[in-house]
View 1 (cartoon, rainbow, N blue to C red):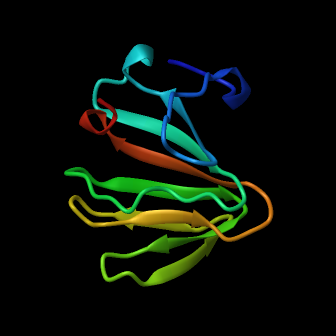
View 2 (tube, one colour; view 1 turned 90 degrees about the horizontal axis):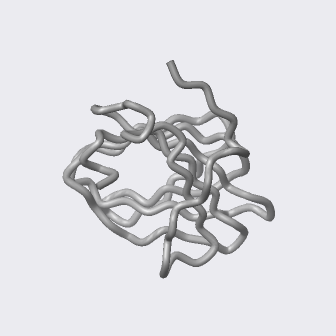
Length: 114
């Protein structure tokens, strides 16, 4: 069993991502050989790349409000307490639409954090 506090987890290097921070909360270094739990914080005006992966994402919005862009370019508003499923190979993007941090937990298979 592994128990952690988010404040004790270092930030990952995300060169090229403006206003986006990522922490690997639980992953292979903790003995999790199948899934990885990540925590993202997107600052005001921040946006993730418009991208796709060959693995699914499970997302829970933890703080703030933002938008998730779907494959057709439509934005869907999300806020604290909302859940998002992004399927494998589905184009997506997260954007902070608020004045404070937009934070979310993102769970992916181990290969998604390689």
